[in-house]
Image (cartoon, rainbow, N blue to C red; front, top):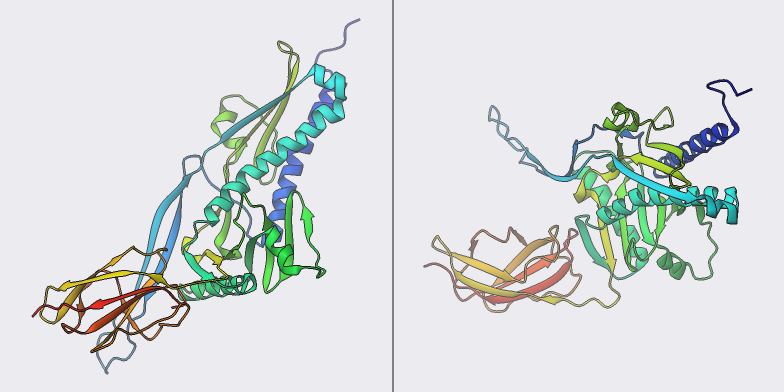
Amino acid sequence: MAAKDNLTKTADIQSTARVIDFVTRFARNWEHLREIMGIMRPIRKEPGAVLKSKTASLTLQSGTVGEGEEIPYSKASIIEKPYDEMTVEKYAKAVSIEAIKTYGYDVAVGMTDDAFLYELQDNVTRRFYEYLNTGELTSMETTWQRALAMAKGRVINKFKQIHRTVTNVVGFANVLDLYDYLGDKDITVQTAFGFQYVQNFMGFSTVFLLSDEEIARGRVIATPVENIVLYYVDPSTSDFARAGLAYTTDGETNLIGFHVEGNYHTAVSESFAIMGMTLFAEYKDAIAVIDVDTTPTLGNLTINSSAGTDSGTTKLTVTPGKEFASNVYKYKTDATTAPVVTYGQSVRNWTTWDGVSDITATTGHKITVVEADGTYKALNAGNTTVTAQT
């Protein structure tokens, strides 16, 4: 007598358990990463939504105004730049019955499922690390320890400037740099779900340890946890679901959809995954990227001076241009001798120049222009004799 219709068979139970285990483990890994980083719950986006990186600044006007006088506005500006579009990505893998026969089900299917899960996870984090390396708070330090300290200090300072609160700062460093710094010192490095990290290290809530492919040696990256967001597209409400393609999801925060079926035409066990995830740092100028240079020297700038538009002004040109967009120009003039500067010297009290506007100066005087980092440490400099408009 034939089995009744809709009977749940052993293969169905194994397949269902495998699918549920896959989506549950994937969700658990991301929940664990979220807890380590201290970031908020993932934010759901619709397919096609455009994510935009931001840079923010505030020019504070003088608060000294007379009685009854109009109070000037402090100008705040936020520049948005499209970064990525939320899409649903499709992945698949297959295991042949020959592989299952040779290696057994647990090895042929179970281990390839583990590798599949890791690669899907790595696809998201790898793009995040690439984005972090383009952070705009850039500078050089002479030691790895100082690079860590300054990376944290600079992102806290940036968030204070735009009046946002920082609870914790997360760092990213090359794993070899950490062990080179520690030497024979003992420290607990935790490993979970493919992530290596150190908690409560040198003022950071967490420092993630990355490979050479993810971050160069001698580089430290930092950003406030409040700057990190995980956006996702819910696979259960995507166009795939409406098209009749059924994927199992976690059921609460649906980060991934997974489906398993046997293909009798090719005698393989096929696995399909769909997901749309982007790990993102909202303010690009609140990502510090600090490189270590143990033998720093002052770089050379070529400065040319020509008559400015108005009487008593000069127009300067500087080559090469800024090494990093976040660097600033400072200058100083002298009647007889070009002001001297050394690498790393603070030029905070020198006059700021936007790199474009004419400068008030006297023909025959000497002028020194310095390219400095965000902490006003001199990186490059050059000087020339002023030619001003008569």
